[in-house]
Image 1: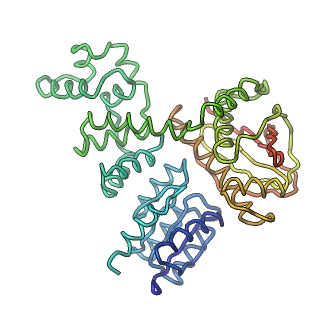
Image 2: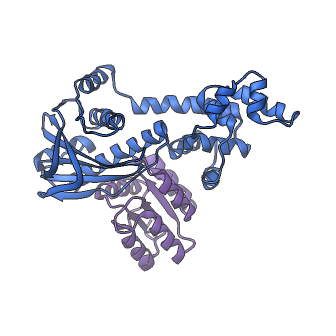
Image 3: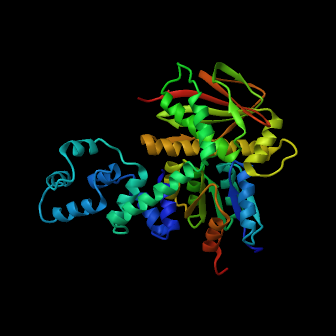
Amino acid sequence: MKDVTILICDDSILARKQLKDSIKKCGFDSFLEASNGQEAIDLYKEHQPDLVFVDIVMPIKDGVEAIHEIRGFDPNAHVIVVSSVGTQTQLKNAIMEGARDFIQKPFTDSGIKEIIKARFEGR
Amino acid sequence: MHTQFFGNFLLNKGIITPEQLIEALKVQSTAHQKLGTLAIHSGYMSAIEVEDVFITQTHYDKRFGELAVELGYLTQEQVDELLTIQLPNYMLLGQILVEKGILTHVEFEDLITEYKSIYEIYDLELIEEQQHMVDKLLSDFYLPEDLPHSEYILSYLTLLFNDLVRFIGEDFTTLNIITLPEIPTNTCISQEVEGSFSFLSGLDMEQDTAVAFAGRYIDEEFEEFNEYVKASMEDFLNLHNGLYSVNMSNDYSMELHLQPPAEHENTLLSTDYPFYLLPIIFSFGTINFLFSVKRIEE
């Protein structure tokens, strides 16, 4: 879909690649990439993407802070947390900040497909 | 077992909706643990017995513990013991779902049994031969005498060997742990884990070894050292420490927080505490596993 942009924020280049590969299978190929929370905030403000995937544990600014600022800028921002094993407290904080859903690493293609479907069904 | 695993498990089974899970997570921090849930968790009472006490409570104005003793389900000693226990997060989540009427105690008990059996398979999915190898490595192992809280370290190493077998391969052996004040690194990734047990962990290896390590870890051929190879090292360390923090939450009700991995290339790594270096020899090269205990709260 040409008019949909997805922002992927993870400090691991490997995780970003794996997530992009999985989303591409759903027919989306327009991505923005950030490697820390501050980059994600800046890119969100500039492009206002349709969907954001954000890791929790990141340098400079973590995922919880990024969600707080993104949702402060745009209360309708659609943010999904991609959490690693063992980040329960931060995950709870991310949900409190307004994350719409979460998926746990290592994720599956079907898990990503469900999230994409829920966000873009009918478009 | 973290709440998110149990939450995902319930979502995948269609037991609860994402909205119900998020609602339960929101109230979790303020929820009080109930004696009935503690009794199920400790194996002292079945869900049916807990339900029986709740029904009896509607006829008599008595506390749960008092009635459970009168009905012969618990002894006073068991009640006293239960009052000192802290519930794992997933049990608290279950209790909230029961209170909200989404689950009954009996359904909750059945789900916990199923969830635990799945989790144990996930945690110890090694075939018998591989498990023997891990057991042998551990039985031959000697831990330095100055290593504090060796039971935490031993469970860390048990998981490490399991994760190496599971994600990299079983063709490795270890040498004894060396204690050093500082470590000269090759290609090194470290991660700090913080909480009442704080430590620094790290993987150090030659670049060629890292290329082979990453190839095995993500099942992809790499011709040279690049960002993906480095990210594979980070990912393995992050996954291992994440699983360890889950185990510590489950076994000791201890919450640990992972910091982002850091890179240290050809430098001298030092902390205020001694480093423990564990050489792990694979057929493709040697991996040095680094460990430094910063703090343990009694």
